[in-house]
Image (cartoon, rainbow, N blue to C red; front, side, top):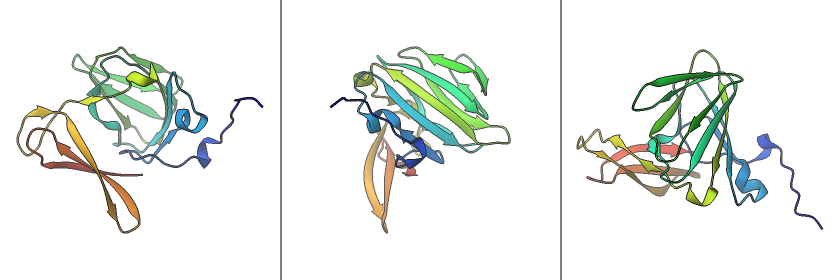
Length: 161
């Protein structure tokens, strides 16, 4: 028996995130050396959880359809269909879908074991630039991820799969 695996992206469960869809392909196939996610984001939706950096993890966004803007400390980059954007380890970024159509974006990162992200955003409650903590809650039959400021504990967002 081989370890080859094939999956249909649309059949995968939707992972918690602030976009319409996030499909964790790497998890579905059991990839251990790289991350591979497919996002579908409506204009205005951000991917993934916030302005962040991965200390030891490279990231590459490939835009299949639509358009995103990647915000960095230096400037914003517009990335359209058929274009890719590379983020070196330790560099802050936040991608947001823009334009008039749904953006479909493939996000690849490595090494997978170093994909932990540090969010660095201003808290609307205390004004400090901090990371976020997350808790899992249930609303009805729906799982909700509640983001809070690591400094003051104020809720800063709720994400649904």
